[in-house]
Image 1 (cartoon, rainbow, N blue to C red):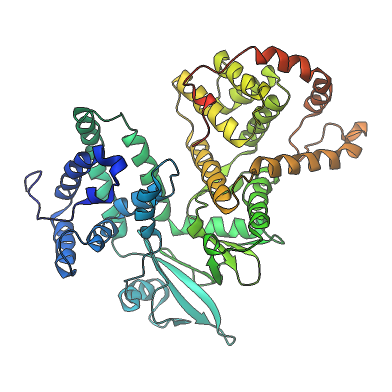
Image 2 (cartoon, one colour):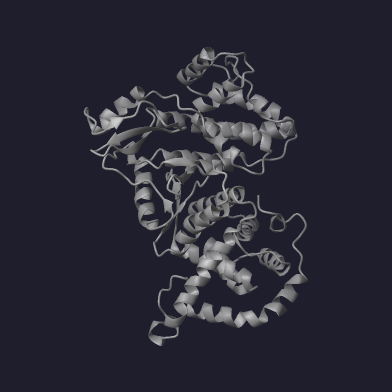
Length: 484
């Protein structure tokens, strides 16, 4: 089949509002390129589904159905729906992909269940699916004498091969997008980087056993916390995750007076708790968007979908802590040590450090947004790529701050993280005064020399701030721009 020899399909460019009208020709060129590169069986399946839909070619349901049938396009739409840099009208269009009514029949998943658990299931399935994702289907069931509620997360039959075939298409599509965009005079966008993140997320969701390990670790981490995670049930198998059901509503749909309290609980649970925890490595939920957060009927907050999780070593957390502490105390050597440990190299660019400290001297809080901008700037100046675990943590922190700001506008997760750190340091002080224990492995991550350095730096902060106020962040520097 020739590159553009595809049947008439809905115009995906219609999803773009007028603000992005310049990108419509790019979408109109890329869509047939993508579809024509799919295996013929996939093309026929997409066309047949379109023929069954009512309405003309411009019907909005046709675009949604097309995106839903292609796992990579479905996931891309969900990712873009959460990107606050985009126009709200476009995000509203794409947000429909996060709450589509399930269409998979329970009977269609029976062969997968019987293959994994045997011909006689030890529970009673519900009448219909609860959710249809790009990778998995979620089915309800009841078990035991108490008829307790559980859910099964089951990978779609053949989904791994389908995703890999689409990933192969994107390897050719990204250069096509870059070339076509340049010919249209559009800005150079990070097509390859965006798709690499998307492919990583889809592949993580294709590994149910990994999610089961994350769920077990999260259950230990959040024991006694207002945050709840589904508990694993005995019927887990390759391709099938069985867990308890958390009852409630999407957190973003709850309009009550406790929004700031919920934001605080989330910041404490998803950020401060793993950061300061003794686990090695620490577990961070890497996809904390509104669809994965549930306001439970009993007042708690449920956190679901642990397929994407960042495992952050103690060394990484100590480096991040030194970066924040170096910013708070305007201590360039400490800041440099933290960045050197993070990038595993000593040639940290001085302009990035000077600009970051100038920001603090002019009143910026050296918190999460500040640290992310500094790390990005250093990566650009060094020409270095961030390690995969650090990239995932960066995505985690950025997503969480957006969720918290949507929940309680103006909320500062930094304050929760710092308050937890201060509480730990204060709790350690009496023991630190005892010489035999002074060199202990402290939960605050502060070595004795760094703690005393912090105390000695406080009286000198005024002079340091005056020095760095004489520096200004360069115009157009990412450090001078608000975090996206």
